[in-house]
Length: 236
Image (cartoon, rainbow, N blue to C red; front, side, top):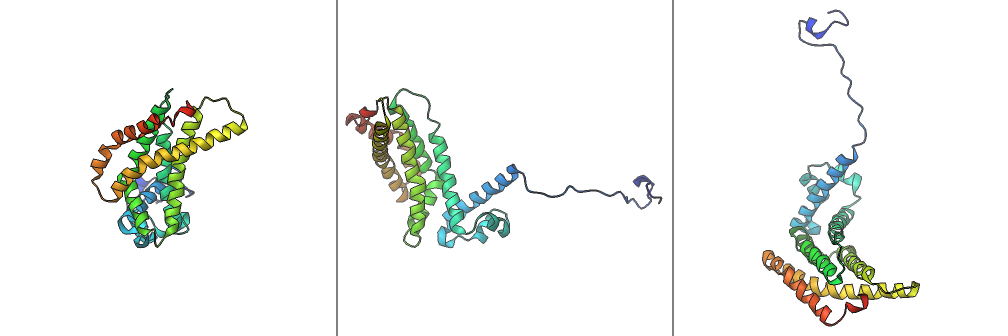
């Protein structure tokens, strides 16, 4: 076969034409994001199924169809991976709460925000992780503290912003700080009154479908108590 002849001239059916493959580089942002989501999905499932002690990066890598090297390149250890799982869950909740529809009614804003938050907290994923944290808290107290700071405190902060920003009081620097402080106190009281009873029932193994079915009435009845006590009045 003459150099430069076409493959059709080659009686063996083989071509000497060289194929140049593009040089491999870093994965695109979309591909990297897909890998991250797959790992976090797998980690969530493994933590829920085996608990923190029983979950291993090897087991998570296998569930995610990823190599151990891929996990170790992203997460220094299991604690860091768990913190990312918690962070993702919290961010999902915060995004949902921030979609509060425009309204002139503080009660309507609080109703939407608290219903949205509780619905998210009673999802299979979050309930499973919360049960794991509670079960492992005696051996791994840092997990409980991490979840508390990332979850409960962030939720209180988000609701307190809804309350404070609704206030139409004229404010200087000191008045503004007082409004924020009072809004945080009210947000804490509201969320503890709404979230704790429903979440406790879920933790104790009550049928989730039943507990979820009571979200609307529970939120409405609890907020009605705060309205009757005129707790919202300073922010109207």
